[in-house]
Length: 71
Image 1: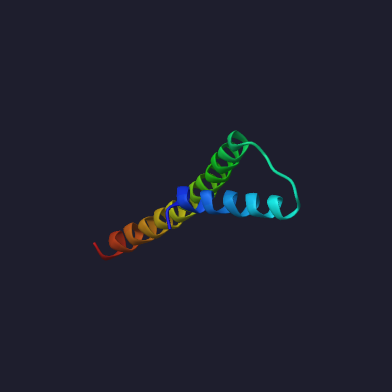
Image 2: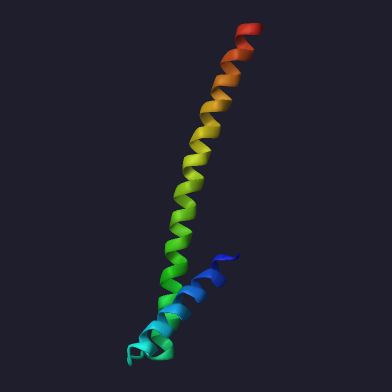
């Protein structure tokens, strides 16, 4: 699922919860909520990718050391 779609689904669920409670917000606020959720998802993805890149870098270094040992 794309992050924009997922963010929209979360905002829509929040809207439903507010309606059930008898409250509501303007459409602009829901749009802003969707953007905030998407930004949070993006941040989490970037942090995970940085962690993966660090692991790949360590493996590459290990392979380089092993290759030098056999040369």
